[in-house]
Length: 243
Image (cartoon, rainbow, N blue to C red; front, side):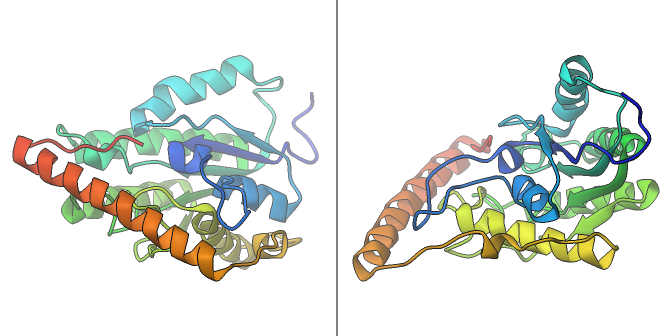
């Protein structure tokens, strides 16, 4: 296949946040933010994201998988998406330098094959227990790599909230994935990409009083479980999350 002309759409790497999947929210399926972006741009979608991935897994596993499995590994894509780091900052042996190196390698791979590359920073209020210092180091590395490789950045530092993030304070809900996609589309549109439709225009839902109460009770229960696990982990001196 020739690499001239239109590309193959959106190519995505990352962890469970990009892989997505989970509970519906008011009947809205939990799809990846990157898939919503592709649908809104009217482009095809190819994802090699794997749950629990670290930045070096993107480089050592996901990219080789793409090169091995893609029908046309040398073809170009209109957009490359990378969102990784939420697992890295939760590791006991967190190494900001190693993360920066692996993240840069992943971005450089996308930059060589995509007309545009898009990446995202990590929310400050991420995970329990929180690790704001590590998140700040990761975000600095993400923005530095983006500047080096000409990637666009979606700033998710302030991302969060009951309806957008699950009780684990890590994984976006169905509406959270859509909110991330909407933020990404704003950045892409400002850079000249044509947005055919917004994700919020592709869904329909209706809330009920009982449904809201049930959702609040489930969230409260799961939140208590997360807090209890966090306390046990703090006592044991470990960070519990891989997602």
